[in-house]
Length: 241
Image (cartoon, rainbow, N blue to C red; front, top):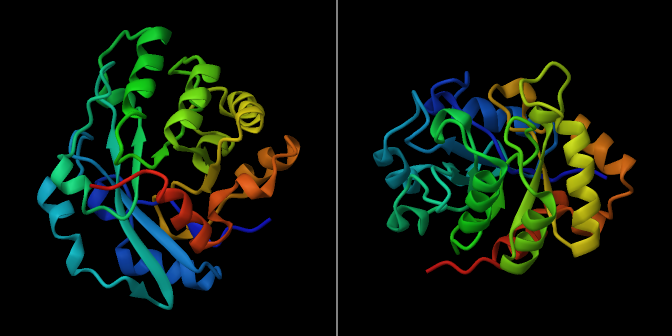
């Protein structure tokens, strides 16, 4: 199994990443990727870009170094109501929308029930395509409820390579990802294998995501980013506008 497009990456605009858009595109081309999604952190993340950044994405070429570029956002889920930090008007303009829970952007001391509810509510948002890194043991959730909701609302769950990389800061990610993938098989929920690259050398790196997918015997037909056309079809499940 090989991915054709990396669905999650960041540039210097996110504040804690290290390369430009063109450097990331060049790395994607050198690694043989057909596509790359740039998904900067939304405004609540400390140090990231202003909403104006997202309003001006239309000026960037959609082909760089022979790579098809998608430009989107990694939203922050802010509370149990599934509140996110970019306006509906801007979400309509995004090629791809990821929604993630990040501890710096969520109320301290939340419970498993609150975190679970936050995911369930954000999945009702028609502009959200992908749930980012739902594998972090520091953010305990009811995985069966989350996967059931993903099936109901047509969302894609992410197998995040950064989470699975040895020495990473997310806890019990490999064990949790096994649980998620088994449930995704049960409910026929699609996944994307994504690098979450913050530097050009990591673009397209899904080594550990592939390992976990193989260990679980996960069906390739439910991996959405093995072709750009397949990804676009699944994103179309979530109506825009």
